Amino acid sequence: MKSILVTGGAGFIGSHLVRHWTERYPDTHLVNLDKLTYAGNLENLKDVETLPNYTFVKGDIVDEKLVDELFDRYRFEGVIHLAAESHVDRSITNPLAFIQTNILGTATLLNAARRAWNGNSDNKLFYHVSTDEVYGSLGKEGLFTETTRYDPRSPYSASKASSDHLVRAYFHTYGLPVVISNCSNNYGGFQFPEKLIPLVINNIRHHKPLPVYGKGENVRDWLYVGDHVAAIDLIFHKGQKGETYNVGGHNEKQNIELVKLLCRIVDKKLGRKEGEAESLITYVQDRAGHDLRYAIDSDKLVRTLGWKPSVTFEEGMEKTVDWYLSNEAWLNNVTSGDYQRYYDRQYGNR
Ligand code: NAD
Ligand code: DAU
Image (cartoon, rainbow, N blue to C red; front, side, top):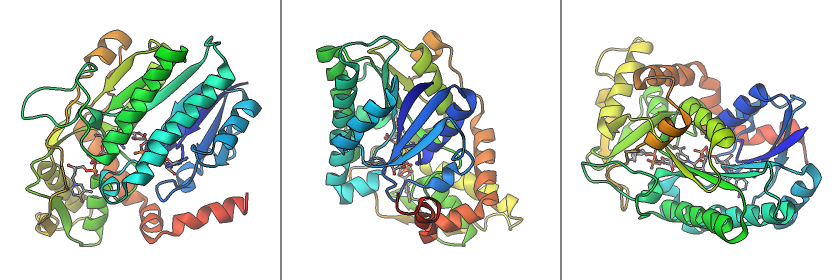
């Protein structure tokens, strides 16, 4: 059986990817290496944990010995690298954790792949999942393309930019077969409620203030997580080695517009009075160095590989709100920290 290493599979996007891949490719063995930081949650993967083509390994991508051992044991033909510190606000308070995981961790994986594949790139691929934030901040006009100059402005985006450069350096210097995708803000179920959408839904549930940074005028381009996973699948199988693909939803929204939309949907679904949630909106101090606008041009992916999003923004938002409202136990476990005990219950001291 062909084996693929997925890193960060217990996180938000990673868990959607693991579920998709194990179901769609039963003849591929997926090994999920995840450190289970606060953002990693094995409850996200309950439905796949007993599948014969899935193995979970708790560990750090910076741990060279472990990563080398895994390459030797499973003879991976592919890597899909998602593990990262991913929250911009945390990168502002603790940048070193981002440098450690996002830069050193990526370098450790690249080195292990280079050693194991030893110049033989037949049927091998190192797929690096990156972000549109590496391109910096747009003004009111324009879109990020694959050739937009890098201009990262937060410790998070600088660490991701650095990892992208390392991936390309391994392609040019050592001929390592790589591909990179840079995508916009994902949304959907299983996202840790420190990120805007699940945070707002959860706070509305509890009648808590909805914190909007600055004036709420910053713009993000929202992409349904299932459509991102479909893009990764397509790029993994059909993308050109050494290339970069941008993935975006073509759904630009100002934060305040998005928060108000969530307020309307959640009020309606909870049978509350119109305007009840909106009254919770609270403008708070802006994020330091807050990028004004991100917007992706996905034309290359659409034109060359035929990708297209499967849900509209409205459908995706409905699905997302429904998911959080019908998975209250998940939200309660995550916000109370209970999910971190799941590993011990499930795996003991392993
Ligand atoms: P997430 O924070 O939800 O999950 C990250 C996962 O990585 C967690 O399971 C965590 O335990 C694991 N991890 C962290 N440090 C690790 C380490 N040192 N070793 C092993 N595992 C470790 O992140 P996400 O939102 O799912 O993002 C996944 C990837 O996609 C990241 O690389 C991120 O930069 C990128 N990305 C995310 C978005 C988005 O909107 N969420 C958009 C563009 C790109
Ligand atoms: O663009 C892709 C990036 O999207 C990914 O690379 C990151 O991993 C992911 O976290 C996300 O980054 P953002 O900073 O855009 O996402 P976040 O959900 O933190 O914030 C979205 C917007 O909402 C941003 O402009 C900041 C604002 N915000 C966020 C929070 C948490 C608020 O106004 N209030 C909040 O409480």
